[in-house]
Length: 263
Image (cartoon, rainbow, N blue to C red; front, side, top):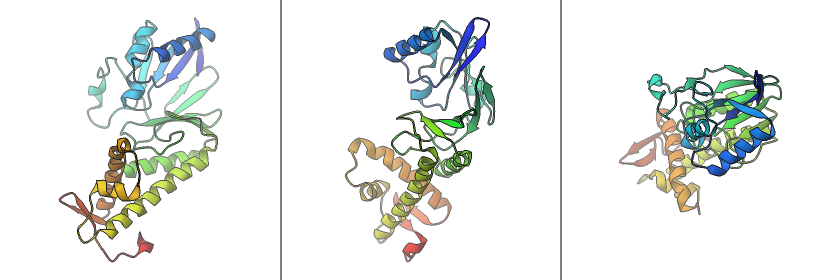
């Protein structure tokens, strides 16, 4: 993203990586040098360290302060002002629907909670393309903190009918609408599978990790904790709906005779 100032073209950087990545910093410097441009603003999709962790290093590498190059993100819902300075920089807060313009392009900030409470995506309006952060990835399903909010965010993004998605991880997604629909369908299928797993063990109940073993057979050990977190978040939604209950970390169907058409 570029814009013109009195000294020439400025670029807007979307996310900064996790920090302490010298190759990344060198590549960033090379691109700006080739384009005869400077760094004008940094936009952050969410608080995770692999997206904001490198902000202070980027500013230092280019000899900029957070006043000369604003670092902007959406605030946390609670005690938002305390976020200022938490990353060693003075953050500027984004608003849902806020436009960030350059000489020849415009980004619209879209609040998409679920992966994290502060997650946003950026719509490149001229192309109706989307910079999706971690809400939608290039190759794999995403993880989330709040399943209900995450599904609402996917539906909101789907309404945009984006032409292309530039994810925070993985390759560019050309068939954007299909990918969003696949994400939604995938989560609906997983919910049914979790209910089926609970139903199969209703006499004694089933733990969240046992659900992982049933639904994700052969899953790499290193990925099981993340899978369990997704299971627990989705079970929380089913618990709120009164469809399951939990006793001593074991999960049960509220109505064990529930037929598969309701699952």
